Image 1 (cartoon, rainbow, N blue to C red):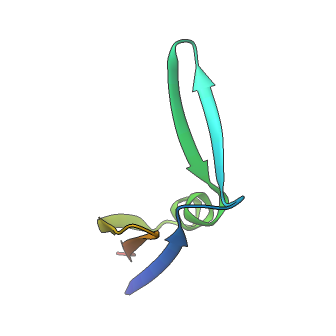
Image 2: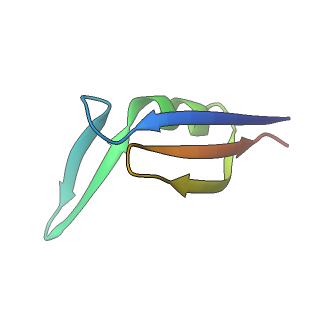
Image 3: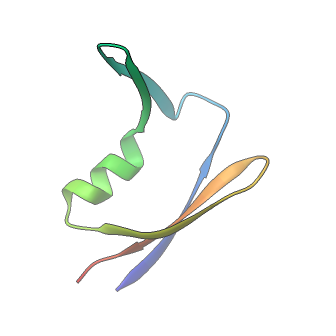
Length: 57
């Protein structure tokens, strides 16, 4: 099964995290899909959003 998720770049959807000197951003929607067994097959970034193509075996 394949799903396409559109996540906006701006807004409250992204949460800044850090581990020591490293910084990264997480997204609750994408994290939920990954926790439910979905894999990121591909992704595309535009000026306003990121399209994630998710696949579940």
